[in-house]
Amino acid sequence: MKLFLDTAEYEEVKTAVEWGVIDGVTTNPTLIAKAGQDHETQVKKICALIGNVSAECVSEKRDNMIVEGRRIAAWHKNVIVKVPLTPDGLGAAKILAGEGIRINVTLCFSVNQALLAAAVGAYIISPFAGRLDDINEDGMRVVADIVSAYRQQEIQTKVLAASIRNPMHVTQAALAGADIGTMPFAVLRMLFNHPLTDAGQKRFLEDYRRARASGGSEADDGARAKPDERSEYRKTQEAKPAAPTTGKPVTPEAATKR
Ligand code: E4P
Image (tube, rainbow, N blue to C red; front, side):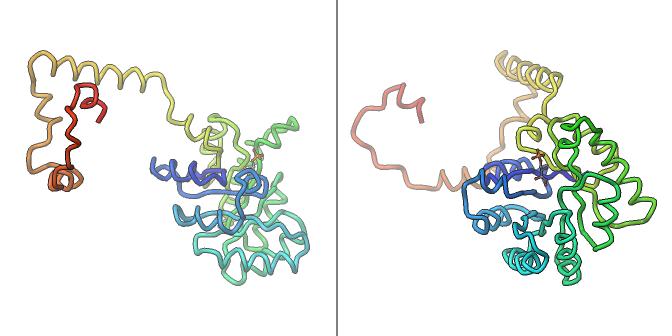
């Protein structure tokens, strides 16, 4: 299952891209409003960081949505145009998909709705698990049922588990066979967490430092770069002429601050 970030916050996307774990981003009008930036500007900025960025139409009528969808698709090659699972939305999706534009059909809550989206050639269907849980229905069951129906019918549309609210949802979506899971930044961060990882890492570093403190050990050889292994950054820094001195004496405090 690919991991997507459900956000319109540039810094969150940048951090997750640096972690190397995400393959795309989903936005929606609420998230864009929260980010407080112009829709086009924000989507283009995010597209410069990563592929597979869903940007949602806000028109309601089919013909307007077709025009808007074409406009959004032209913003960047990484854009996936999002339309709601309404008769107008799917009517627009059919035309846009026919023009080769990747479509994410959003606000899906049932297997039958997912079949409708597949019928118009959607690239992605987004069942909202968390919002089903909110009304006392089993959101992940619906995700699993859509995956199963698509596999049986040999439908190529990708299933994107959306409205993920916690790490358990992520595990359940993966076990249900979803192609993609999109989640808020806070949930993505939580996926790293395990007390044994923290304890193990702490212990490794303590052992290593203790060995070094006791007069050098084989461990030192692994950690210290040999002269020819200096990073490119260090080589550039060392090649720079020394900074002009201020004439003031360098105190130990100032030296350690650097
Ligand atoms: C997905 O594309 C949606 O933006 C999102 O998952 C909605 O999640 P929410 O129900 O937590 O708002």
